[in-house]
Length: 218
Image (cartoon, rainbow, N blue to C red; front, side, top):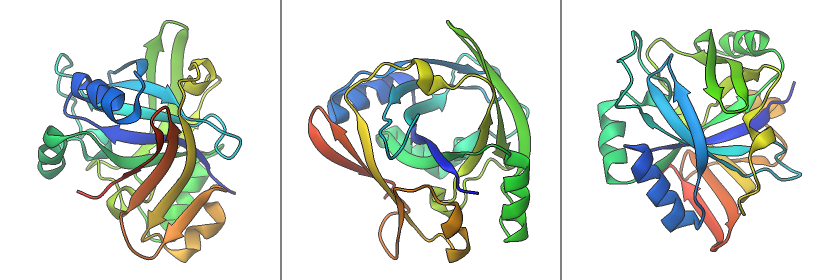
């Protein structure tokens, strides 16, 4: 079963830093997001969907300084000291999340290929339009895999955040990944390609400032 590209993850040292970077780099102001009580993080969002990537969005995420420290490692390596040092200098594309209809089955399929995507957690966050609920695979150590190229898997409930995001002038044109095994080719979304070298992730977007490529190179 093919995955769908759900969202790109931009890590930031703070949401203020991330929003300023987004306006300066991409020419748009991100929409308000919300807080993730399970992980002690919060986010801002932008629609980047296109016919090739329906319902895709961009997430700027940071540790919430007002939230209690969670009892577990945060997702997307946000507790990793090296990544924190890197994000202190500037926000960066660090990961992508793939949407699927049966996250448990997909995690089992990855495990059979030797990839431990982690346990499936139930998560939620309040929004002005109601509660968002989803299930997401997170390792106990919070690690991304493949330098972020192997996606985190997500299964949404009845509501998806992109359904209420206004068009903001961003369109995702392509995502290129480096280092994924050939065994995953039949699961990659259409429009996602593989590279033999270069950054683990490289995404090209049409923006009010023209085409801009973001990559995960430190």
